[in-house]
Length: 291
Image 1 (spheres, rainbow, N blue to C red):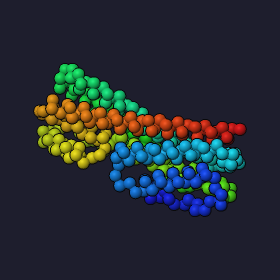
Image 2 (cartoon, rainbow, N blue to C red):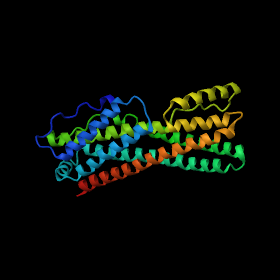
Image 3 (spheres, helix red, strand yellow):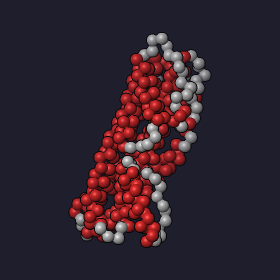
Image 4 (cartoon, rainbow, N blue to C red):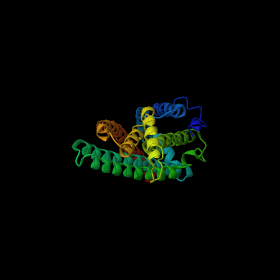
């Protein structure tokens, strides 16, 4: 999908384009390049992409309020591409909400687990029970993310908006707004996959050999994987299945959970601001069409 982000955009703009058009195109181009060239994922990379999305949608919000833009949308109000634009704004809101809810749910469970570890109520038995609750909550989060990703399947690969009015102004605006939707959904989709992490085995019948192999694989993943969500999932599974030495691992778990909470907080702040941007743009579009 990323490889198609640069295609079909009008190459020529009016001789004196509005500065917001230039800004939107610049932010859009930077994000498209980032999506196309990313070979790995990390929380710091997603933080930068969120910052880029905020800058892009700040421009879009201002662009939609321009009289010139409003004239185009009013004139094209009954066109199919305007309906698709509104549908796209709902997809952005829904996807952003799923990511934010998944993060907040994980954060709440992580905090409760940290509290149990700090107090060590009931010792290892209670900590292990709370860890199992956390891992069960992660399964709920992953299921919700999987459903959201299924709903998104194919939507971001749809073609450009196709205004029947082929004047340059209309085509340029429609093309840009479609590209904004595509690159935003692409980044949010990648973030959902990052939050979810790799699928875990559903088998509940663990042999001793399976447990030992799991612990070995978990250690390798913890060393190599930059994904804080995957690291915590792996560390907690290792704690549950380890035969001995759990007390020594509690400080390590605490550190992993603190790192995860920091990442979640950063993501949530970015997504909350982005969500507000999406709402403002959608409200502006609806107001334009209803007046």
